[in-house]
Length: 114
Length: 100
Length: 240
Ligand code: SF4
Ligand code: SF4
Ligand code: FES
Image 1: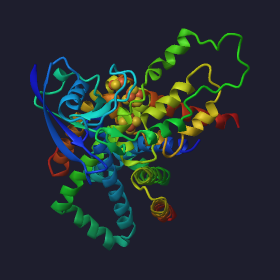
Image 2: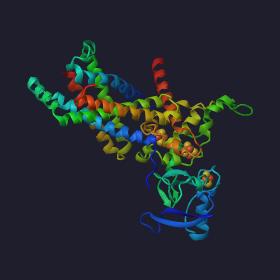
Image 3: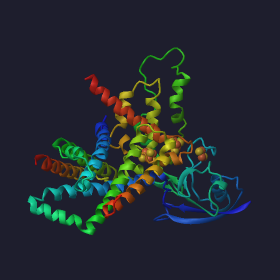
Image 4: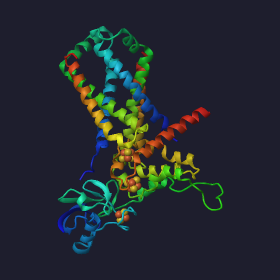
């Protein structure tokens, strides 16, 4: 039987996975952006950005970044001295924030207006 | 005492990224729509902002991977190799972008 | 008396190549403790069942096992507090198994030794004793109550992954002496914990706090040590 996972473990797993994804994205992003030169390259990128698949990818990216950010703020607060009795409420708050940011972000990225 | 400043910088870089990312996202995605004031667009495109933002992002990402490597890789040799790799990739990315 | 099923993960190094599960049906009072179940099995059903216990009152820390997926003391877990049905018992995770529920705690104790778990003070001792005020004691009161059971370390995801990580109880032990008003080895103690497999492997996951049978707020103690390390480093800069 696996050891029980508690709220803090979930927060940590989310932080790990989103962190690795973001690091991967950052590396690829920096690598490819460096290799586009001139207006032609830029145009092809600009065209690519309109691709629905890319739009979808961007939405996922936003969600992952939101999760990592809000969870990260939670950890910084806790390590800066926020008492342990706040660790779970802070996670619920972060989770709420992630959902809200994801929905509004997805809405605006996928063409809606807010 | 080891690892104190690198750990502290991870938090500081994180906080820099939160503010920077908000600006980066807004400018990149909404600047065309005319909903953004000129000031933030200008700020985001200054070389200084870019350099700090870029350095923080690379540091934060690679310190994170570094820590994961320390935790999960048991073989000392493999760990050294992976760490050297992480260090070179981050250094390459940073210099390539700062040199431009 | 009611029927309970204890499903125990067993391993006999002389017979088994890998661990096997065995179920025991026993009669227990709902006020009994999981440890009473072990004793009943050993006395009446299978004398070869191997487990550790000495005090049977939550003081010695020797009966820690994994109960229904959670590290805890067998002598402090009352039957009525675990969900009805099968009770799943395993040896502590992340510790090498010797036999059945007995694990090798030597690596764990070794990590506690890394934290120098003894008072260091080279000043000549006073006539009677080194005094400590109640306020000074208050600062380390929680950390003193640790019984070295290993529940915290065995439930910490960092400890599972990193074989060299000191783990929560060793860091707590460091705290206990760093904050002790009578101790004089701050420098050495900080060196022993501010290292790659020390403080920085704690990611404030709070699993240790969830399982600690003495209800010690371990993570906040570790966080305090992190802040102290930063403070010490930065003040060192300003002094030159
Ligand atoms: S801190 Fe708690 S869980 Fe860890 S060894 Fe001490 S008493 Fe056991
Ligand atoms: S708070 Fe730190 S020591 Fe405790 S379980 Fe989590 S990582 Fe381990
Ligand atoms: S037997 Fe001593 S703590 Fe359980």
